[in-house]
Length: 197
Image (cartoon, rainbow, N blue to C red; front, side, top):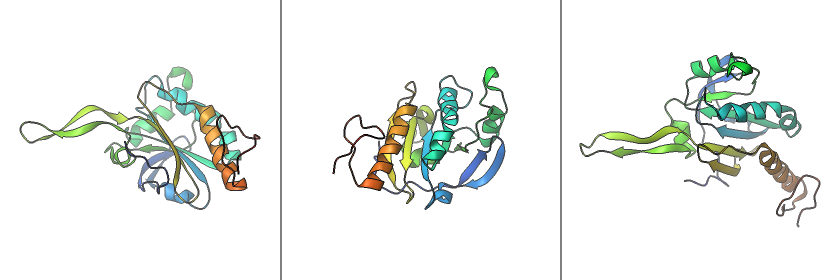
């Protein structure tokens, strides 16, 4: 597993669904450079059991992300058509209607590979043919990217282990505290606590 912290976030252009249904052909995180922080997160699949709990939780916290000047962007291996369909279905019927932040489509799994969150591996079989072993979907990876496009925090969970929105916000607050005051944030630091010079 690659550690991308301290490096420029891998660049991509891909189709995404934004504002709950609009298709954008060449979506890129580069649009946020110099303007916003980015929380770029991967999830295994649309129309699954755990993924909508995370996707909807991030949408419910958009006021908090906006206060912190953070763009939230999700990504899975589903096509933009599947994203668009899922976004059109009410929550009480298994959909994620109401989610407005972008969902990137990565059916070729190249973005997942570049961020090293693809569950499984390409291998050669005894006939010399390339095969794939594993579920061929994204681990639950989260990447906090600063305004300069550098990854400042990453966490990657296995497929059955969901992430913590509280910890996500805490890490954003810690990064912004460090940038503003030049103070490191000790264990269990929360916004308003003292840092260490």
